[in-house]
Length: 115
Image (cartoon, rainbow, N blue to C red; front, side, top):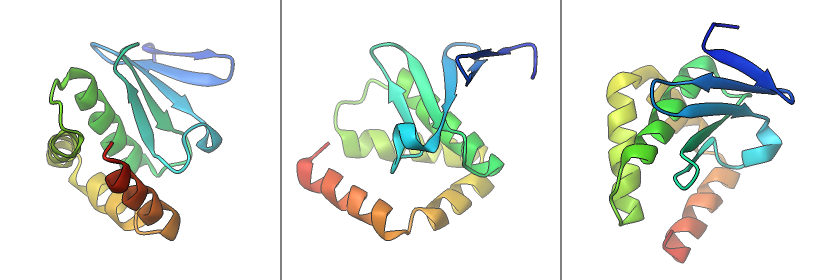
């Protein structure tokens, strides 16, 4: 564990310069890889992801915490673009593992619901 990390009730919490990043089990977020809680200003990232994907998802979620864009599609595009520039390999691997039927159904439902 690095000096900017701590464990609280089996959760690994990393302090970024601005926001806490909580590493959680797959069951907490599935089928999503991460979540940005803008109200609490906390990023959540799944612990079962490959290291490169975890870096990409962390960057993606931290971007959400700073972004004030209203339309969710534009918000996702911006967060993906920002994170892909910093972690291109993580973006590629993330895109590949996102092609499962569960994830594709999740994306479809999200577009259908408009959020």
